[in-house]
Image (cartoon, rainbow over all chains, first blue to last red; front, side, top):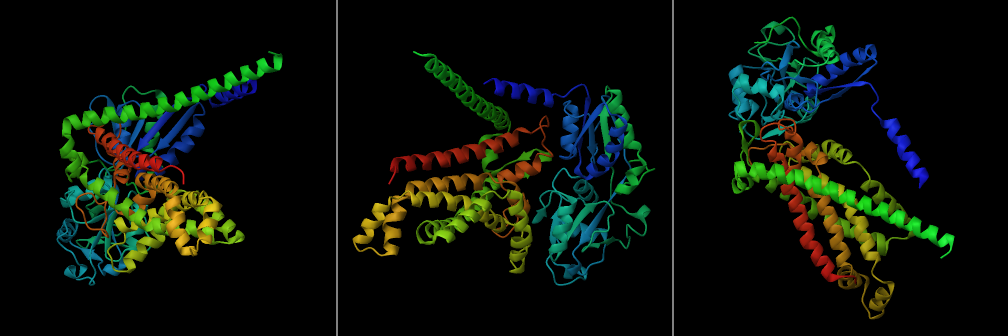
Length: 254
Length: 292
């Protein structure tokens, strides 16, 4: 029996957290790639701090931070920070509408887009496209991109049949593969196999300044946070790497 | 009592203690899990109403509309589809493997089934995205994401588990019984239908229950092909959402500490009670039948 006891004690010592400070960053999945890119060099420069990063969504990050289970919340939706939390904008991130090439649509008016997402337009032929049923691919409730679309187009939750996908990548894949599909994604990546739609003749790529659909990602952290948390929060909110991840900096949230 | 005997008894007592502690730990963890679910669910049901929540079909978590009737219906439909598809094939595979196949076929089939039952569910979901969804779409039956796609993926997922357990159940029928049946003039089909299947029914029902429990609880593979529509029932080929997939999806908007998080506890408890009730009821029937 002694060997079992020794093994357990050894394992306990190996797994003990030690004296390193732990910081948890949690929130919007669309921001985790950016956060990881900032956290890695920051953690190398702060060897006594261990940083854990997890997605889960803006709400999960916000509530975890409020409950003291996370130190920094990454959000692509706005929450009221009150006096207990700091809020910093990370810039703005475009929300683009993408369509399957078989739809035969390259440009839509804003009102047509609203009617599409309300389920009033059922076939792309009604907008001058091919004879193809409209199929909507959307993000779940709680996604920043969905909130932007819902607010901009006045789309309610009780819409027509929609395929819900949990990530940008899954939306792109579903739109690529489904004839008649339309969806929306955050960021200005050149997604292969889909058409980035112009809205009212405006293309995001040609004139980003005129584009009307943007999410405004933010980070939150407690006012009474440790100096390490504050340092990491500043690194996240000020990093020049933001532009590499589709964030447009130097703008103020509405 | 000599020294060796005393040492053996001491060792036995220690191991019995370890076993007792381990069992107690399992029951404690399980009790804690159920207690957390029950507390969250009771708080939620007291506030929103039990019948209203169970039978309604309005789901807007941020607006406080939290009715799960549609998810219960979709869960039942997806599970029923999967079981209907998997059962005949599973029994066929089990009969072939245990009674018909030669030695090398048996070895290969057993190896494939064991391997397939160990494949992670996300791989089945990926297969669903790559094969089932485009296949259904190609038949002109909608976007491809829907209850039927989920049922097909789930059927493939539970088939190996069901087949292996059914195989074992059929093997448990004594060889003498086969010989007697054949000696009395039964042909192979009569032997299987009139003797093997009834005699192995208790084991087959256990296999069924295990497969059913896996089907009801599966989340990831189903989520990948189901489509996630929560507002209406769009038919078998339309998108939908089950209890498990909606818990996964809405964990992001109803995390612990948020208002209405209790609905997720409530959904998990409904799932837990549903599976316990089904397996408990059918399990009693199985025990009633006993061994062949």
